[in-house]
Image (cartoon, rainbow, N blue to C red; front, side, top):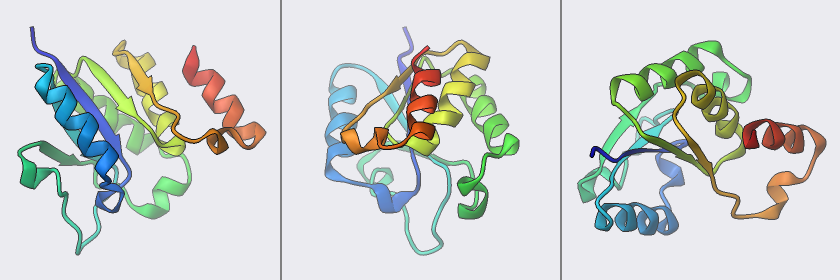
Amino acid sequence: MDKRILYILDDPSRDKHVHEYVLEGLREKGYFPIVAYFWQHQDLRSTYANKGFLTLYLNSSIKTHKRFSLRNLWKLVFLIRSMNIKIVHVQRHRLMVYCALASQITGVPLIYTVRLTSVLRNKKRITAFRFAAK
């Protein structure tokens, strides 16, 4: 069984040790984590690529990332389908909206990790989280 998990991050500046722990743990359990970034800084590269993880970029811009973009959604849907992804994992609120919609379109389960309760600090985010939780 192919256990491909798409691990979504904003950009390589979000490469943190906690993500590395999760990615290494998934790999040790027999999963194949794929790291996907919504955008790429010109001078930053993924530290996870150097550690043997497949890393991909959706080539969004920070500008389109701040507002909802159908183009970004369809890029994500295409990636999920073309890479035969089995699970999508995301920790960032803004990306969770894209991932929740892509999950509904593709039928691929979504895991959203809440690390800080401040994520649910306003009504807009609470509404988005409830939508994704369905």
